[in-house]
Length: 246
Image (cartoon, rainbow, N blue to C red; front, side):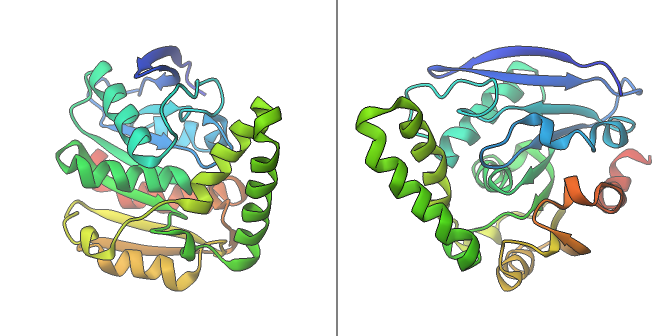
């Protein structure tokens, strides 16, 4: 595994932690990995070696996750997208490939809609356009946990934090299928066969994007990057090959 530079940047009222893995090639394109709800950058530990062979790899702990602070701003995907913009500007990255898992995919979509000129390609792994895209038996305990945390918010900062994080899944995102037609960069929607996102919803995302490929990894689930890294990495690198095989 290559050695990473790590640091914090200031974004609004929060300090954000990031890792910067240099590629073996000095002119390699940049690939940014965005983890899911309640996780941190280490979710992608099975991707670092494979992807950094071809890309300068940036991993960031989303605001309120891992080593990144929450700050005083309300947690939502527009704030996360603004954080990503500030990180790219700080690192002087004019354009990057984005791979977002779950809520990280929702951040990637939100960022791409706001700043399409900064996105070379978009890989959405288990993203959703709205809370109804999540299967009921996954969403129900999340909603239950959210309201339980809300009950204890007046007495516990940890309960408030947990409610803020779970609230991202309960109340967000709100992305229209019509807006996806404006994203003309190459896109891939990749899911596991037993994903927590409804298959019809994932296919709707792929069909609404003008230049998208849909991939379903068999015998895997929502966490296919961790559960089936060999298959996941192969599909991602095959999709991105035109950008690094020049």
